[in-house]
Image (cartoon, rainbow, N blue to C red; front, side, top):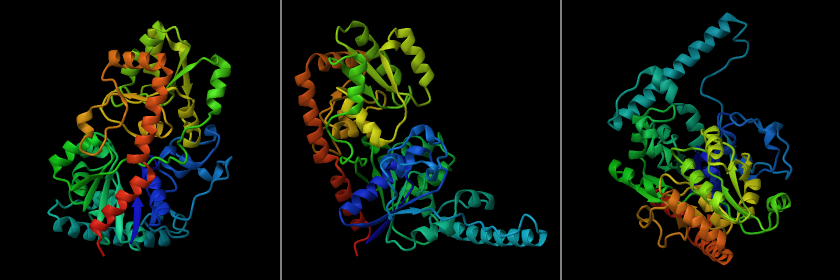
Length: 435
């Protein structure tokens, strides 16, 4: 059985395929040359490079030297060019330009018929020609998926599967935002009705965030839970060059609190985290530094809040960096702080647990009991007061930090490792393609 994976948000597809191939499965992932933020390219996951040489919104990886000489493996495929044909000399010769326009018009009408017939079979409303051309690219899609048995489409890519060109069993993978907001038209340039329909028609839907289960139930989705892939070959306990640098600056008896979540007050609860830690920093007698991610929608708001709380001088700002460097920050930390809004965890908590670190976050057990045989041994903090108390306990007791860290790594390896991700994906593929 061969699977093709399309839609590499935050390298979730790339890491899933990496896990599958390590397990002996035939799987490929398609990555576009452009159009994704830097964090959604394999280079961000595997490379070691100077971040200042990379455009965040439109990276040209050919121009970025890799200090570790990493190159893409053969199973990372390039998304083919668009279906629209470009003829030589069309800008200079009116006749050639006219031929190009007629060719593309014929392709557009053919695609419109394909999409219209597929939507009609599914009982979905017909689209205008302009909307079909904006939201579908069936000939490019055919070139990508025709050689595979099962399509695994991430985020908004399941929309392409609605066209049945070619018909394939398909699995939609939600990474949180598609079901929380995109199907309601709150984010993304996608038709929310088509996105919702693509998840409803999927042979299976993979939920990677436990809190999205009520949405999946409401939509009547055929869903399973499989955790986000995190590469424990990269994220693991060990020494840290970053730790050495921090100790050289602040002293050997330093306690490092690290919050890798982007500055986003609504989704990540960054303001809650800052106020809870700021109180601790004002009251503690320990030598403590707070390391924060210097990216996100609310960086300036967070800096202003830190100033008003009087702790700006106790903060180290960590620039966005590739995962090979981010792992050094996790290993440098004594305590990792994740998110304090939605009541569940994403990649940051899993990466920290793989590194054997205690993690504090807003954690609702009721969100997680349905999908994990054993709840993760994280430290729950629902508000500023609980966060303050948790940081006090962990800072005062090094043995507690070490014990919780050991427990988190054991839990990660048992319930969240790449082996777990590969095993659960393969089980799902056999369900939708039993031959």
